[in-house]
Length: 258
View 1: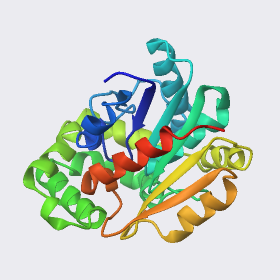
View 2: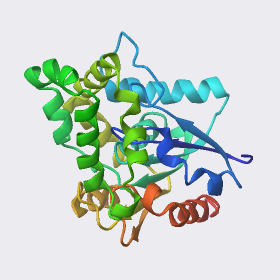
View 3: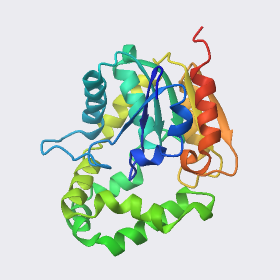
């Protein structure tokens, strides 16, 4: 597309393809950039990788530098919302506005991360998650993530598991999860109250992963935020209600800053 730059950041166990249905709407008015975070989608995880939140924030900034983008609006889904907050907290001058879609509300370590950091689980699960098991796990995860089960197709499940079908990529996924530390989460959380960016929180009301306390806590601490609820929609509104989500994003981004 053409217009001001807009970067879309996916969530945990997801990829840039999560935005496929939104991109046609957004690219009418914006130059849309899609990123696969390290260890997800088509992006490998570097061999030297320690603190996932901090290093992913640096990866996003490096991506903007490589594209010659000085300032941008960010959209983040779920964990991608936390990443967007982290980028804005550490580099406030690089971010114009934020849109957080069913964002993880901080400051505790997500349950999936806590499990992946367990020495036993992270040692054996990459070997156990062969394709049939991956498909079953993905179907369970997305059954809980999507309110409209009609959308839960075999093609969607195949798309979700494709990046993790090799043992190397599964090991990389667990290295990424192991690198999400409580300290990294607390660092992002500590910077939230100081942020002055305009923030839109879009919340699928039927979210079965996150409780309302997540959006409430962020809304209370982000001084320049608003919340819009999307009914009959689960944890991934960009998949279930792409036109509605895109309309809210466009309206928010085209509003005068002052």
